[in-house]
Image (cartoon, rainbow, N blue to C red):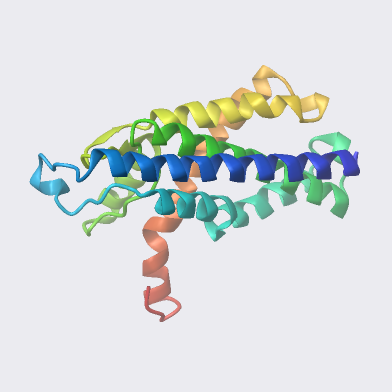
Length: 219
């Protein structure tokens, strides 16, 4: 099982990187064809549409950045502690397989979001608030979980994210162990995917403040 899982991890990571690369090149071509975007609202005048290179950077940071790797360690550790799924066992090897399985899902989902969103200019990046109360910043965290900017700077439902989060979790049933390869588990993983997005957004919203006020470092 360990060998099979390792092969699946390598294959899906490679596929995800290829998809993200295609998305990046497609987005670059799209910008070359459309030219500068006209801003119809003053509030969006500072927004710059995402480029292919930035889309690729987002994929890397969202897949292997601290906001993704740290929750993965916790998730794999918790699953190992309660031995779920049981097929992996409660060992370090089981921890590695759980971590690898999560990473394949995250990378595939991010590649799908980057690639599909490139078709209509959906920007997957998180945008921090420019200030305000704690409550306002929390609302922005939740809002940015379900919406994304378009090329004109306006916010709209993050359709690519919806498709990628649900689609990746359904697709992953094809390489998961039998005990969690069903529609019910895929639905739970989809819900947890959006919960995880809230956590990732919170990290990006507040980490700069943590570095300044607690670690005494500049952002």
